[in-house]
Image 1: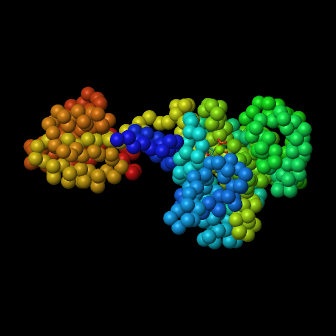
Image 2 (image 1 turned 180 degrees about the vertical axis):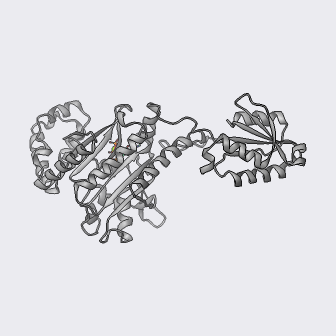
Image 3 (image 1 turned 120 degrees about the vertical axis):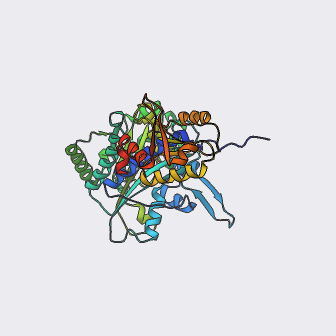
Length: 429
Ligand code: ATP
Ligand code: MG
């Protein structure tokens, strides 16, 4: 029989690696809480319509990357390729945008049918931040400071660069588009194939073409920044001033455009050259028109998404992950002879006394020797030994597995004290 396999580009997360993900997720959640952002969760499936109407019909995502299918009722559904559209849908549906501001985050899997490679998967994970109801550059700066803190606290600040651009108002973009198309049409034959197609469908996307020939042609092209409307120009300048004052370094990249149609004004990416072609760790921008476009009242908004696989790859490549994330057992309780029920109840007492302790209670019997081997393999630092004699007297043997120290025989409260003084952090957990 053919072996069953996961779908290409969709990864299992095995227990040896889950500690890294938990570290990353916990760090992110802690920082998001520091800024008073609140979590929102929404389904993984939405009506296809939602993504078509928000991301845009002629974007890579909608044209060729979505997992779309008809359900049993014949409704067209899509596995979410990103979170912003669903977040707006959920907020609108529940009246969260009416006369109020929102600072929100979410975390979870996204789905895109792309060619799998390092840093690019068909199921990947994002933490997303979306903020609603504020027009000024101060909130743009807050969002950028938040993303900067995440990268700093994870230890990769010196491996990433913040690139900034302004995409201007819809009108400025339209003017610029026609100037760009006029210019590029003269060189149509020299453009790469994708860019030729985009000349009519989505000309702005030509700016971030990977083709060196196209990039060369763009050197002489009109600049989006020269076509900005006054309001966007001033917004962009004030944002830069705040970032300079706050000491957040950035580069203005006039060719930065995002792959989704709903962005305007501020657009940004955190990029690294430590991961090859998949160098964008975090990407986002302002999308003041989206809520209205989806049927709500005009509502200014800004957000970003961080690709967690790429962020983790960066932490691995730069050795920024703390030691011991794959260790799950501090103490291993060895139970030899007819002592199973005593062992389990002693383990419960210890968990009551030390809620932060990682205690593995051996099940399934076996000789003292074989259990000690398992204790050693578990990575535990201490083995507690319960034989029939100890069970009779209400005591436990305490054996230190990683250092020369004599074995002791102690009562349960004494054991708890020993463990508490060994791991002071247990006191506060
Ligand atoms: P790219 O240009 O790399 O395809 P994108 O512009 O499509 O990225 P966004 O839609 O802005 O990406 O998503 C935000 C972040 O999510 C990206 O910067 C990246 O870190 C991550 N990401 C996007 N697509 C994938 C994927 N297929 N696999 C892993 N991470 C991804
Ligand atoms: Mg993409």
